[in-house]
Image 1 (cartoon, rainbow, N blue to C red):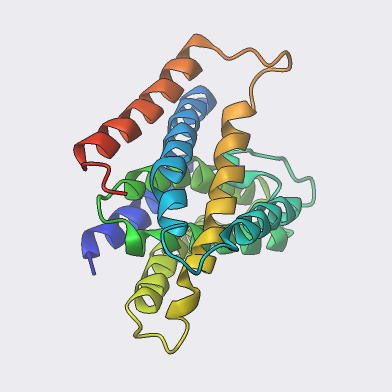
Image 2: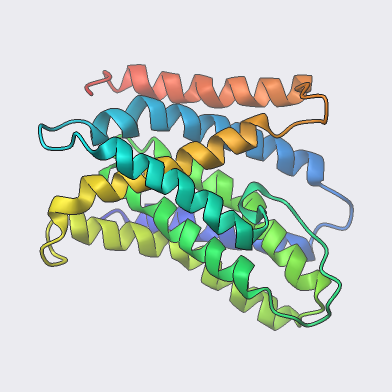
Length: 241
């Protein structure tokens, strides 16, 4: 198991959340560009690597059903997370009310996102997921700060969120090599659910733009860079899938 992947996953989210203590002026435009890049990259990786991998095998004809389940699961989670995984920051007027729905759904989302890394032979996913968690952690920290949480408590909650993707990676690694008892046969179906989540997250990020659905030049460049880097990785890996 690659420890460097766990460290990148944890520190990208943790430092992204810590950014709320450092940023004095509004950095929302920069966060939107990071989101656009990571959304395009995740979408391309899902199409180029994860979906072909999921269908690779004779007994996985029902993978499409699990992809749909994953897609709908993310729709359900967003009823509680309020889009924080897209970097959305919503103001909450009730002081010191802990946003349980946001925290729980965001942690489950991050846990599931870490799962494909067990099969990430070409390290294509690790950077996209890590980048994607930076604005999510920043948004979570901002919500906690708006709700007047103490600084120490904010650090703890961001650390809990940051550990979820590495935990998902660790659990899926155990499943895929059979060390977690008896459910390795279901790994491809679990991956189908994760693919559905990735498709929802990435397409939502890509299609969220201005009211008239016009994409800015900067966002278009970020999207093309994300897809371009994914394609470079695909072709240099020999697209063995």
